[in-house]
Length: 470
Image 1: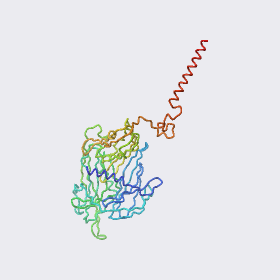
Image 2: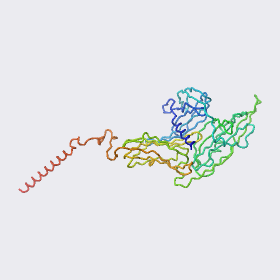
Image 3: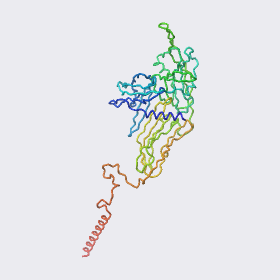
Image 4: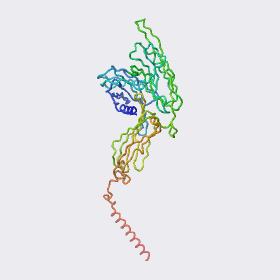
């Protein structure tokens, strides 16, 4: 649970630290930069955001001196605002620092669909970081058939879960590991052709895919079993199984060129193959439930923002709530909250996003509401805001509820008219006017008028009655 909490905090940190650092084009496209204070185990992130379209953009990030250009990841976001849905996609380029220190990054350009988008120069502070050593590394199994003359290099396809629940995300990675003390020269052999072919052979069927979008190998320093390796990660994606059918990941053959020692013509180059181990993933069926298959499956947390918890009746307040987790966030329904006698709700916006965080794909759904309390008392937001999902930690269906209690003071709203929104209208602020201050609105004036009319009618009747007798 602590690891999941760290992931959620990491996502919130990433979403919060991204800030503009480039010139804006006529179309509103900007190049932005992530945190400018990182460690050697972290990355400098440069990214841009575009509306989602049928044709993926053609882009090229520049090389940066003192940084190694790694892979590109993408995230998707859907924003509901003013009755319209706007979908965007963010492409993030990762750069790995070569060392520690202060690095001045000059103004460079990113090419997007033939257009050159510049960013302003900035400075990055890089501190020493810890080696990337994960618990998963201890469980890595070197497949049989590894060539002994390559000093322990191996090719591995791995997953973080072998028995996920149906709908629960599991992540597949395809990597080539080379020990740091490797004395054999190995050269990649047309990875631009063989990696896509290997991905097609490995890609699970009948699963929803969220791809990490690695366009080139991602280079990592890892350690397991007391030995340091360089990992070249070629592919990474999270999958959400749609049924309980067994998923078979076949054995794959990865080709590299081995260069023998020597000079000139004495150097010999030959192709060698590394074989990954096959394995199966067996999704577990969910318990029988009316919402099985209709709600997300995973581990989720609530993140709420409420400016104040004590308000007066009629005082509007904005409430932002985010559901963050490793499940498939597209299954979260649009949260429609009905107003009642005590409180009025109106939805301001809804946003969905999916982004890679470490080795997981994290989804986030954020709703913003305008809340107007109409009766004094204590209003529990958990009565109105609930999210049902299958909790993979507890292995049962669970509900997230808001723990916030809103304290409302003042007079009930139904005792007064409220016309402050009718600016310029004849009824604007009419409830604030004193009726006794308006001529002919006073009760005594109306009473005198009515008495006068009655007296006039009586005189007329008496006159007509006397005339009829004559």
